[in-house]
Image (cartoon, rainbow, N blue to C red):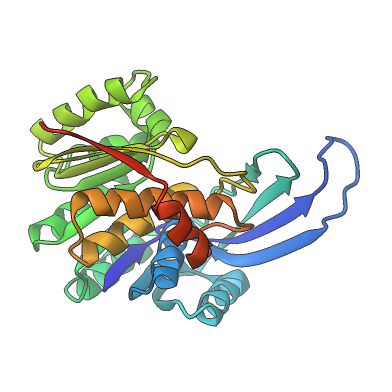
Amino acid sequence: MILCLTPNPAIDRTLYVDTIKLGEVHRAEKVLIAAGGKGLNVARTIHTLGCDALCMGPIGGHSGDLLAELAGQEGLVADWTRVRNETRTCMILVQANQDSTVINDAGQILDVNECKALIDDVCQRAWLADLICVCGSLPPGFSMEQYKSLLSELVSIGKQVWLDTSGEALRTALEVKGVCIKVNSDELGTALDTKILNIKQASKIGHHLLEDGISKVAVTFGKDGAIFFTEAGTWIARSPLVKVVSSVGSGDAFLGGLLFALDRDDSFEVALRKAVSAGAANALEFGGGKLSISEFDTLYKKVDITVEDI
């Protein structure tokens, strides 16, 4: 089982419109309401690919009840931590021939006791998991000290812990030896106060992170592919070209594909190939973490992998 923690879940409302012009009235041609947040997108991908995932995170109020119901309707197994304040709602606007526009609510405020309850719940269920991912932003009230303590605890009990976050949370995660990091090049560059313009630059940074105690590192470059660093070697993937419907959730689908493969004990090369295929397949869909198995299988054969020994 793969435990997918979303510290700041949301109701995602995805609206498809022909064009977007500020200051004008628009009518959506298609609407999708789903349990959202990066960890839920990862779990959705894992579930679609055929592996067991457990969703965790804090939910509250009527929108929290709706999120739990929507996740259940998709067949996602969950163990939620109930909190007082209302779960946030995020808006995703998808328009023809352009990438999506995303408006994220900051999220519900958690008090000290709610933060402790969430950490306790995760640590209790972590013993049942083979892999753990902690994905997305932190809710207001959840301190960096608590975040670092949670990650350290999960690593200390021997779990392979994957992080997909940004900003201060990513900088904090990079201080925890033994964690695994999946980020895009912009997120990693911002956290390290540099610009990562290409895979060659990412390669130098990735090797330094391994030397500093990070267990594994995956850095994505959108349509340009990804690079995956482990102690066993480095793999570079070129993504097949696709006609993007929406890139929202593609990074999450990438991580879902990666964890799915690692849970099956696939080789690192195969794991990267499945990750890139899942991310590209998600870009063809309307909604985060969604993908067609047939598209996934087709794209898998088109991913170009090269190997670079450390």
